Length: 315
Length: 220
Image (cartoon, rainbow over all chains, first blue to last red; front, side):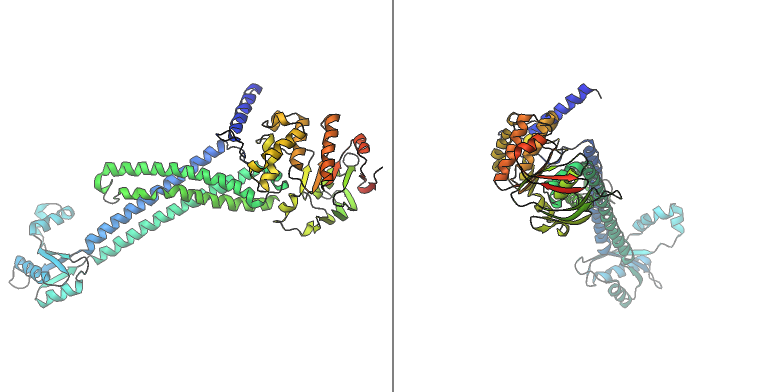
């Protein structure tokens, strides 16, 4: 860099500093004790912004996964399937009709209906394939049962009723699937929370590193402040305020980015979002305003702890 | 201020200062003299709590500095105004904000101290340089700025290391008058200087460091 361009740069910098020394009314105000940020601040903002973006996506994904799990759980818990085996001379249709009639009278059952053979074949077709194979298979007759969502009938109660009516049948209340769905929902939520926590830790580590670098770069300033009677907490406060503001801004941009992506997915995917496995709702975006606040808090705590520790060591 | 058997060495080198024992009474005015490298700056740094002695005790404002808690040091330092040889001005603050620094750290608002700072800048001949940054000031102007910062909070103890080294004779006399005035208002003043003429004209006692020892030369 030439001497001339250096001088121009210094003049521009001083003009910018001068502007901060006065408010709009032209009255003097105390200039910031930390020098204005440099290119490293922009890099730090970018990194924190990306971390916030990813954290927001993780939380939105967790909300979607949770909503999907709730939906599946509601569907599975609100219904049961009964496999009916005809006895003696009774036809399969008659046995299924009798089972449906019996189940309809059980407390906690809203509706019970025998599944038509064609529908049962349609259910099996994706697994078995060719219609000719299905013709050779002994397809069981099924009864679908809709349960009262507030007080659903138990599998035991339905089995007892069927046995009492002399129907040979097995009741599947989907409890096996339900457990898996609940577990999957819990795991998805835990994974998202862990991812968000990990990203917050990464942001804290980045801020701590930047604070250390900032203190090292401003060693002379810190020494002057100490000699002039500044307390450690005052000096730490300068750094925590700077990094909290930086993280809040980066968090805002990260949240806006994540919000735009989520909104795009929601718009493209219609009512269920991009996929039924991850149904997004507009209300999910309500979590995003918390991102800049949490980012600022994490940065504040990380900068404060690092600055206090390093200032002790510097002294 | 009381020094009792204070010694100072850097690393394993021989002691720079040995067995310093003296009192500086509140409201006193002394010069500190001695050849270059005698330890004048080291002595001032110890007084400013910037450098701990290797041995001996230093009492400042009636408190043993070796027993001062970390949290108490800033409050003791606020009672000391120091002009160091390297000035240590903050490049990103203009003359006004550099001078106002001790007042800001003491919790005062800009509206409260603006008039005092402006007046002091005028006293040291920088009334037209209020908004200038240290890089734009001459060596002498920087020196005067550092002096203004050291005295702006009316400290109880003023330590100055060659405060008139980079200014012309007229300004040196003016700065000395400022220190005398502050001393008259109750501040204890200790000025390290090579300027024998200035010392002689001031009529103040001299603490002379010679071969690591301190000798008191009473006022003529």
